Length: 95
Image (cartoon, rainbow, N blue to C red; front, side):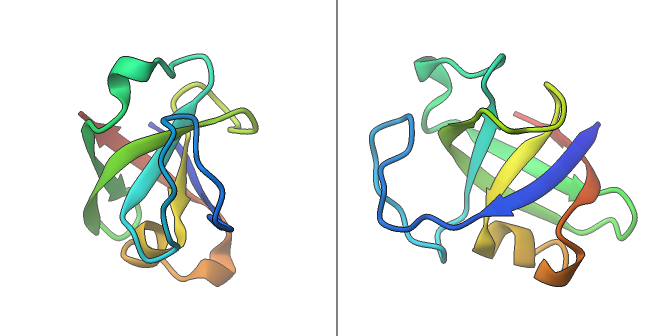
């Protein structure tokens, strides 16, 4: 597992070359793991504490992720798992 954080889209294309809104269920993977062949793959992400899950699509890389197994989620994906006010939570995930 790793940690989940969130980021605002701000109308900027991610590493996969697509622009998304904060309401889209997307995820950025750690830059060490990122490769363009991951673009469009779905990831099932679980909040370890609550057991809540969401499925999001890889759309970007995360240069600031805490560990190679951490993810940066869109606002909508993060809110499906936790309140934005917590900022981060322990997560597990799989393709």
